[in-house]
Image (cartoon, rainbow, N blue to C red; front, top):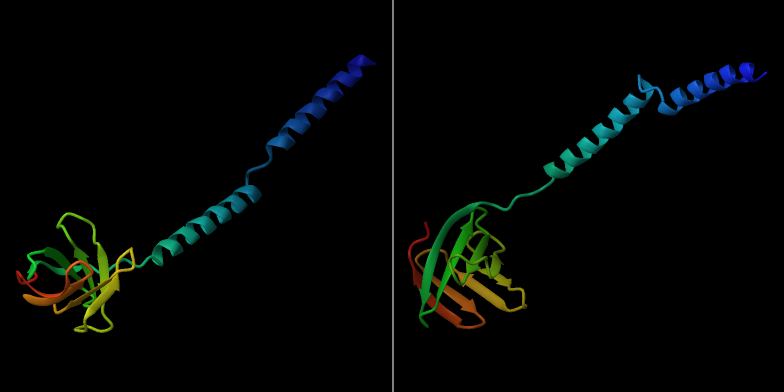
Length: 141
């Protein structure tokens, strides 16, 4: 009797082991491919929705009446300027205008007001440290 059970048990074990592996021919691969495509499409859509800042159109360094210096990078949208107190530093404030040619205004990370009027060789710069003053610089390039 033991001899009859052993072959049946081996056949059952073999059947269960192949069932556990699953058949990856059409059904599962199709589902896996669909999931992979959905993930790729979501990633591509998210990347397509990223809006890059406008490039720098021109930049210049300015010396003001109090002998302070600041650096301005005018962006190509004609409505944004990045102000730095040292040329190699990141911007201390990003100023925006409501329309091309309008004054640039903004607040720094501490909530202090900044303003820049003009974009040529002579500008009026208002900062918390120096107040409003005229500044002269190299023509932005």
